[in-house]
Length: 135
Image (cartoon, rainbow, N blue to C red):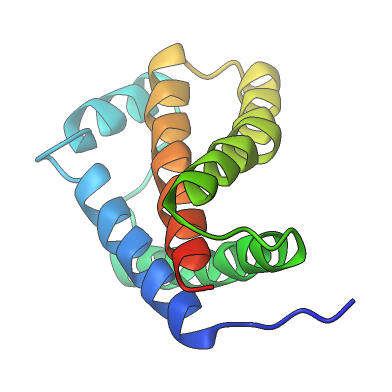
């Protein structure tokens, strides 16, 4: 298997999703509801270390974007329509299913699941579409 990594597209996609996560979890969108639900579920007992949190988020977005790159390249996905479809499939089969398992065991609220799952959907679609359009 010969997989090519588009480092520029990976970094751009990760940065866009990083920016989206900063907006998604800010008071402008879902930040207040997200924090309220976390506290209600007893999931935040201390202040968040924003620098460390954002560093982790960016590193894992690079990893996730690299994995999506492998999928897009392996299946030779090209164009916006196919990129969107692959993003939805990745969300449905990987990120949403993974989150649902954790939420079931941890008994987190449906609101938290919705906030996280919709972010994963947006990120998966953005990443796969950008990578597919660069092919």
